[in-house]
Length: 122
Ligand SMILES: [Zn+2]
Image (cartoon, protein in one colour):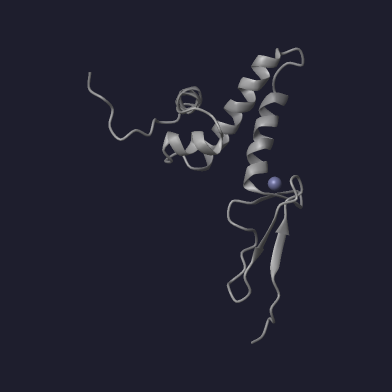
């Protein structure tokens, strides 16, 4: 049984980052967290950026720059929440390079349950 030392690798269409799979390990169809859109591969970071761009594209053409920036950020956060709603806000904020407050607001906007250790009883 020799598949030789073939290293399987994938290249992201958008940022050209390449990831490879060690020989001898069962090769997945795609690396974890990568996705394929009509035969084109995207790494996780680019999927997030594309989600942001999609969000901006949904705005009216004359939307102010500030709204575009907010929508871009919100869509990226929403993408991350959608991937794994159970993740703590801090982690989502970190990968999206935004604030925890922005993540909480995004959760409210999309109706995702908050992930907090315990709700504080007033
Ligand atoms: Zn990429």
